Image (cartoon, rainbow, N blue to C red):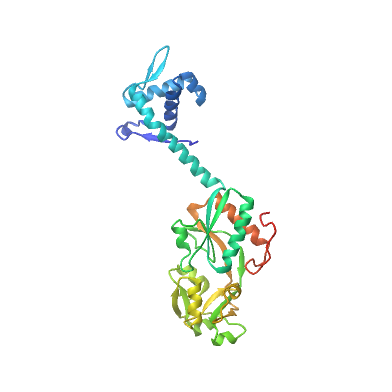
Length: 329
């Protein structure tokens, strides 16, 4: 039910003649029952309240809405037309409110989950299975998001929640859940690059080559992975832009630049023309769920809780190939 809806007639609004939700409800119920006593009983109000409401509406509209005698109550032609106009519209309002409440509070329907990264997709599928065990009436629809601008799908309402390395700044339109797991960084370099023969590299080494840049991503996302300067103050030169992980690896493979990647890439994105070298002092990749603040629902909250519980069972779920026999518990 809705608590308060006011229908205003603009022609008489200056006189304060607003028709409130309860007035409409009483009018429609009396139009169905054609009996003041039963109407009052159905709506848990007094018979006097019903009579006063109808008289008030008739004064506002300017004509009688009901014919009342000692033996019968009937709608007048104007009353019948008003009833026919208001009844379906009022039902649609109530149904719309109920659907909105169910969508916001219920854990059912469809939840659209996006992800960025090869192994991350497997993690999302596993969490979705665990989520379905807990909430069998809610389906999860999974979609891969481009590396270049994963938040675009959130902003365009094409997905509800995104698993990514992303920490929105204060005041942004996005909310981030807690960190689910962390990965140490590695540097993807051409297989014949001098770095490929080293046991590790540092952030200072990034100034010795061009670092690729994901296309279109916000600066705060880019700088969380690649700082503008090295710890020693050297400017990090940027190379060609890319949209997807496969584009990035192709550019690295042909020697167009290097790029920091999470540890799981060395296993899931192995290729003969790319080598992965530990980036010792690079910031860790912190994976978390992100969603639009204004679009948060019980479904999103429930999925975030399931992801948190699932990740807590594994130190690094992207490198752990064992599957929990009952991940929903």
